[in-house]
Amino acid sequence: MTEEIHVSYSGEYWLKHSDAPFATFLAVVQSHLHSEADPDNFAALKRRAQSDRPDDAELQTFRSELSRLLAGDREGLPSDAIGLAADGDDWSTDDEFLLWLWQQLYPNEPVPSGQ
Amino acid sequence: MSEAAEPADERGRAEADRPVEARLSDGTQTTSQETPDHLSADLREQMLRDPRFTRLGWGAEPGVEEQYVAREAAQPVADAESDQSEETVTGRRVAEQMEDESSGAATDAEDNSGDPAEEAADVSVPFSVDTEVDSEPIKSRFDRWDPERLAMARPPKPEVSEADDVQPDDRTEGNDRRAEDERNGVAYIAASKDTRPWLAPAAECEPIVQSVYASIDQSDGHGHIRHGAMGSDEMQARRVAFNEDPAQPDPEKRALGVDGIDDSKQHYCGKDSTRVHDATALAAVYVMAAEHPEVRAVLDRPFDENVQPRDIAVPIAELLGSDGHEFCSGFTLKGWPEAKAARKEWLQVARAGGDLSEMPEPEVERIPTFEGGDIKIVFKRNLEAKRYGIYTLFPRPFEE
Image (cartoon, rainbow over the protein chains, first blue to last red):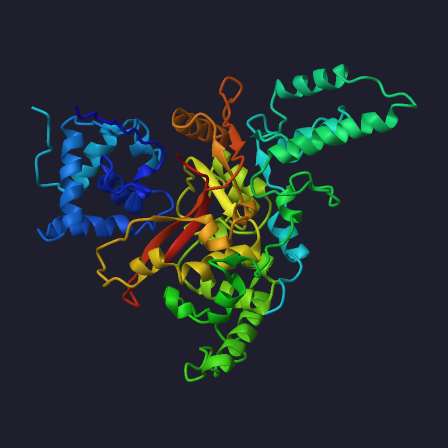
């Protein structure tokens, strides 16, 4: 009988566990939107998102994970993870942040939903 | 390379560490170093060691004072025979508290300056470049230091006249080049430390350390500014509590939260603010990072101006040796993440001169230790050089 092992993560787990839940999304958010990041980085992410190159594996994973989050899939995501990655105080909730982020990066595309 | 010199330039540190006078909503001004005068000197000292920092100072929040008063009242009265034991108990209690504060502040601070915000971090044993990492002294990495490996410029020549070329001669090689960089680095620090106070801690360090700082200061990064040896730990505590930017040299603007690097915006600090509080240690972090395989894996990758590398976390021990965590210190916002919104609201009201009487003020806690922790390295895209470089770096405590 195979026993399932559930691992729960905490803190900035994506720094050391690149295959953990939503690690790519959180790492990309942190390196572009964290208060310690270069303020010019987000503009670069927008350009990168707009170019949407199929060979940009990191961006494709990021987009996929952002879509899942917007659709309500938070499995394995610690409750404070998004707040740690994007540590600003311009958003009241994670949902507010995720919606804003999608609209900034993919303004001409419908927001993914769980329906 | 000889042993690291004495710690930071006192005048430079004093300037950078000038008490920030916070404007409170009731119109009074207070420095963060005040503690109630009516308590005994011993209890005042203990309060100043309290890891809780508030706008009234260390351990000085309402309610905490009563705890200290009660504690003093419970102490046995000293008589002629037990004077020694009383002193010993008190001294031991203070020593135990200092031992508990086991972050970068390794030793008890005999605060001769009378500045209670001068933490033990400022008088701890200096970092030694004889420290070994991978069986090799860090000193040898300083001997190999080349700022170009971090996409940094060499220290600029002192400006003698407009006609002189201020760029170092790239044709200079080997030891001559290093000697030139050290001369220029020392001159740069001496000329710049008054207007760029984050350089002052390096002013009394070895010339090679000053050379490293001069190169870091030419690059577009803030690790040495916000997360370095300037000032005391109080600046980190106030950064977390009140979004006051250590990079802001104007005390009035700092108290108002004006960002020191971009004064068109308000400064924001996340959950923690940390630093490497020894100037030589901070330089060593950059020097060691230049050769660390995980860092090189980022810096040496093909450059794409739209691709930002992820942050990485390198164990402190791999950069500063097994005791490197002793040179790290910092604070965390108590009650994160809910405290984030509360802090924002409190600051909005405080800076507008509103009524704070019913609002819980931000509380911070000292991070007890960085043993087992990392240095987080944040990269940048150097568009001019078309290379990746280091934007900032700072210590993180151990996370399970």
